Image (cartoon, rainbow, N blue to C red; front, side, top):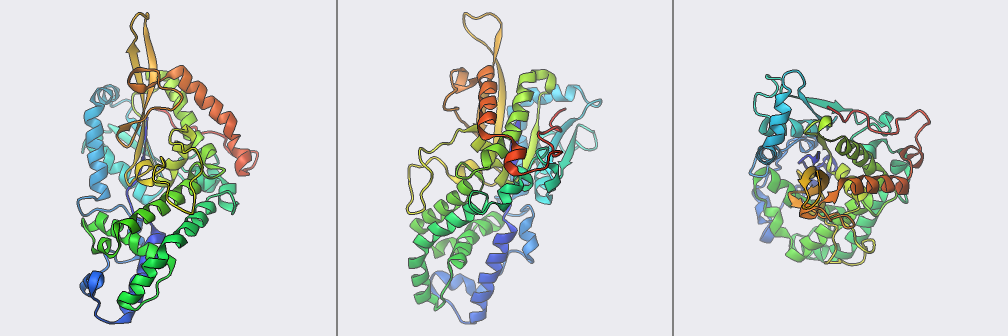
Length: 395
């Protein structure tokens, strides 16, 4: 059972980059130093909306990354793919994507690598697109869009991430602003500087490299990294009120599939935004810092890092293992967690082979977590007739 995040820059960031680039161009002077590249530099998108789509060029493109991931998982889980193909053509394998063009394209490129380039023509697998509309309640891949209180609560909802990130950002941009003012004679806002730092990663993803990376020092990028960590920690992670309940929906549906075992089907793939990965990890309760992340300084020993939790193209895989245990009759089932190609031990449940968790304990853990986080409908302020669980995740 796996959940994948698509690989893309965001529309909001694209708008911020456009604004700061236009400001620099309007200065209409020849720049030097670390900004000398800008004299002949051109935007790598034509409109803000182009940054909303899956990247298709460069060595780090989303299309290439998604296809390559499909090939790698095809190699790793070839035996499960063979079981899925055994039921073809009477029952093609279903896989799911939330209703966003970049997410859908990610799922399709993954499928080309995993199921083969003729999977559609051969009816080997079929993509099911799940609406992101707020009316779906709990029956969704994107609960951040359906949990109404998460969007309305300006103190403990998703806005908390932007506010606390902004607080921290204000602690490190002042010397950058002073340096750039002296260098090119422009006074940049906190958002301008942050947007330029984002440009380094976005352009590298599209073009393979970026001169924007040389505008800032390594320490300044470490501060930028932590600002991103704070944003996701408090927007959709352990630092906010609704994340665990949102992530528990998919965790619970997947746990039920694991309990059903091989009869449920050998493979389940779903594709979402990176903002939907963080709630899932929060519900799993596996990347825990003893205290909430501070906004005054960087705790370098922290566990929660955006680059590890949900990088571009990030994924969570739950594996159901069937093992013969020594001196024990029959076979036992275990759950192993793989986050971004790294086996991750569940802190309070790792007694099985390869630090896996006995399935019965994993199921009990999921149930307890559901009781702790509360009912999704009530917490999110949804109507009585709103869906209270995921119903579509089945073969």
